[in-house]
Amino acid sequence: MTRKTVNEVLILMKAIRARLNELQSLRSQVSTRDTHFYGDQSKNIKEPQYDVKLVDKKIVELANFLLLADSAIKNSNAVTHVSIDINIDSLLKPLE
Image 1: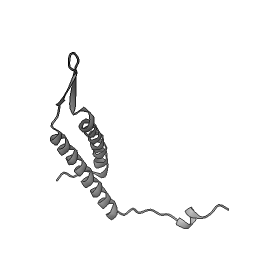
Image 2 (image 1 turned 90 degrees about the vertical axis):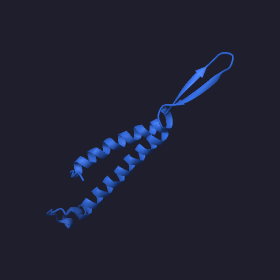
Image 3 (image 1 turned 135 degrees about the vertical axis):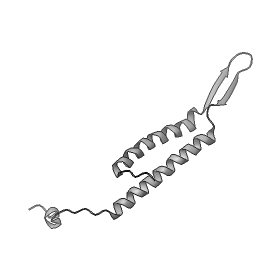
Image 4 (image 1 turned 30 degrees about the vertical axis):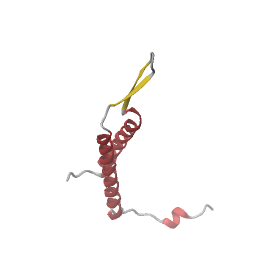
């Protein structure tokens, strides 16, 4: 298990989300190549460019990472205490 700081994981999550969006777009739009033939008979041929199962497998892998990373960060936040001197009454008192 690799130890990372919360900031490192947040940066990684941002990059993973961008990659996930790219792959989702690939899965839905660019995974096939359309070839159009015109002449006596108009014909369209769709050829898969990527194995849809492999693209979907990678999408699920990235989504699972995001879930685990988000859960780990929330768990870390749940047990981390912050020491700060504040007077809540003074901060939240109405204007005079």
